[in-house]
Image 1 (cartoon, rainbow, N blue to C red):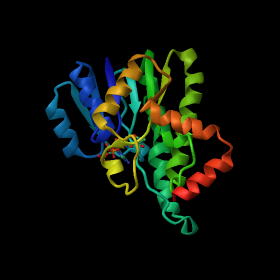
Image 2 (cartoon, rainbow, N blue to C red):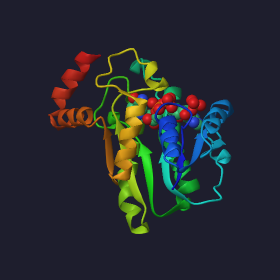
Image 3 (cartoon, protein in one colour):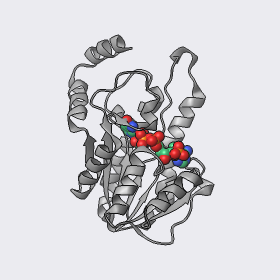
Image 4 (cartoon, rainbow, N blue to C red):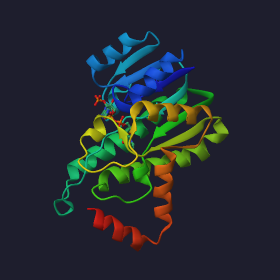
Length: 235
Ligand SMILES: NC(=O)c1ccc[n+]([C@@H]2O[C@H](COP(=O)([O-])OP(=O)(O)OC[C@H]3O[C@@H](n4cnc5c(N)ncnc54)[C@H](OP(=O)(O)O)[C@@H]3O)[C@@H](O)[C@H]2O)c1
C-alpha cells in the first residue's frame, strides 16, 4: 500500500509514518523541516519525504504516483488567551493550517487516491464541545470534522472512503505547551496504533481514546447552559 502523511516529522504523524513503514508499506512523509525529514528517511528505507510549507498552495508538489491512503494530519494549536483583545493573527494562523491547508491538499492530491482508497482527516475531540481558549483551534477542528463527514457522503460514489480522527489528549510537542490538566492522555505510540487499527477496520470515525470522546459526547447531549456553567468554572 502507498501511504501519504502530512505532519510526519513529529508526534502522531511521525508515529503513523514509522508504523506503516515498519509494516512494509511505501510511505511519503511530508514536513517542512529538511533535517527532521532526513532523520525519518534514514530510519527506514520505505519512507520517502517531501518538504514544503502546507499553508502555501504554490509549494504543493504534484504526485507522480497514485496513493491508497492519504492522511492529512498536520495541524497546530494557538489558544486565544484574551478574548477581549482578540488575536486575529493567531486565529488566522490556526484556521490556515488546520482547515484551509486541508482544502489545498484535497485540490492537489485527491485525484491521486486510487479507487477503493481512503482519505483520513485528523481533527480533534475539541470539535465536539466548545472549550475555553479554543475559539480558534475548536472552530478549525469543528470545520474539519464537518468537511470530513461531508466528503464521506460525496466521495462514496467515487469509491473513496473517508475517516475522521478525533483524538483526546496525546503526548506530543503540541500538547507539551499546555499548562492545564490533560485527562486520559495517551502516548503518541498508543494513539497511532489505535488510529491504524481504526483505519484498517474501515471506521468512518476514529475516536482515541474512545472513553474520553464518549464523555465529551455525553456532555454535548446536556442542555447547553449546563456545559456553559461547567466550562466557565473550569477557566
Ligand atoms: N496531541 C494532541 O493531543 C492532539 C489532540 C487532538 C488532535 N490533534 C491533532 O493531531 C494532529 C497532529 O498533532 P500532534 O499532536 O502530533 O502535533 P505535533 O507533534 O506538533 O506535529 C504537528 C505536525 O504538523 C506539522 N506542521 C505544522 N504546521 C505546519 C505547516 N504550516 N506546514 C507544514 N507542516 C506543518 C509539524 O511540522 P514541524 O515538525 O515542522 O513543526 C509536525 O510535523 C494535529 O492536526 C492536531 O491538531 C492532536
